Image (cartoon, rainbow, N blue to C red):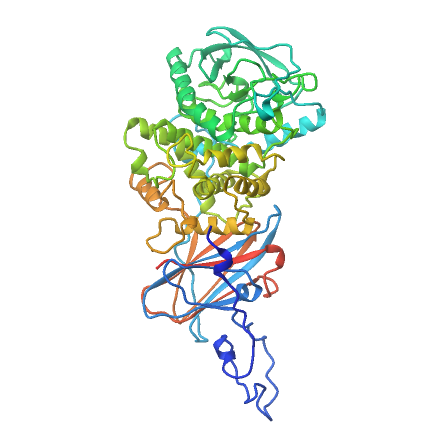
Length: 634
């Protein structure tokens, strides 16, 4: 772990007589004993003098300093130099509450001249324009960006589901697996579903309501037709969607999810509880999902898992008491909702199954196999884990592992490999781009959306690289990180969620006990300096599965739809110079960071940085739990 305590700068100046004041960055005349000169006129009125410089930094390439004390955050300096230099400055909050927001002013001033030239900035990555998709159906041939925008964040649907379970009360069904926590097998249902055969009809109850929500009293029966029976999945088709997928389409999909998705997701997130006794999870393609969205709405629900299916049917009549992931079905004419092409469903199916399967496994580790009751993980961790499920399923599909520092060219080496990238990885990186372009505009601890999905996935990928044990080996080559993700999935013995879950998982698998502030600091540095062309950077602030500069540059060169603009981290570039004064106002939300790049092409004077509250011009309030991190990258 990057030792933030050893790199912590606590250089708050103590004003004592003589030259020490000048060394601390203060200005003004002092008398021989340190007081004002005798018989001097009263000081002129005007704005108060700036506070003393709390820290003066002289860094070597690759060196990282973390400032946490009030004086250093308020005002610090970087010494001038005669050569070209570059620094990354991260102004961050480590607050753990989901609703914190602090208006911040960050100012960088060069030299001693009073005549400043305002720096308008350059290099700030623009946010993508959010364009509507009305009239863009059927859903086939869309760009990656357009396809991703069609996915809602499901936050409202999940909130409604949990509200419904709280309303009906009752109990989740219990069926546990042998050994330890699963030593007893028990279930209240009397209607076990035997392992079906192809072309069997199975009755599945739908909790979907006419308005697109979920209700324990929905209970609409659908007689689905079994299309495949694999070792881990049963694929079932709604008769209303028959005739669009061929038998061979279903056989190929079953082989994909059986051979590549199920093994890795089981290893990373735990085994299903098998409530229905068929030893398989049902992947149900049904137009009931299509009915949850409207044509031209700009977003459709393409699939989900509902915890209602894990509940005792006595308390929740629409429960199937079975492991089911619900998937959108082809509907080119829009008979039951938006027009959805067969090709679109084929493109998203295997990644979507991996994503929703993680949600199912996560809930079952807590609710069915555990003791959490209704114990869903927080949005950013739960969605992050589902995007990790997509990632590792895609790597497993092409026989690749983790911690290999991949670029795009390393994994898109042929037709099969490129298709796996498109289906499993590209959506993750699109979400990451949404997050990196607006790192202070979203609160990762509260709410939903693409940016928070991007934060969740990116943070957890770094966490696996950073804290996943190297041994014993896991299912993928390169690491035993599955142990870390299994611990995150169940939330430990107390079924924790969010930040508390992250910290307990780290402690369980590594024995380390970092604070959230320390973990977040390392992560924010990593996404700024991963594989930077400078020696000396701590290993803790690197991604090891992906080489971020190489990955995004090669995606740009390959003109990957939605991923062709280079690494998208938004960083305000400030050129260091004697006539520079750059003022930047922004809101610092809980657990977010704002990035600045200080750069000189040659010699530059001392630069003084000030961070303050926008309205009061005083110190950053304690509630922001602020830190400033400075890294020399050139």
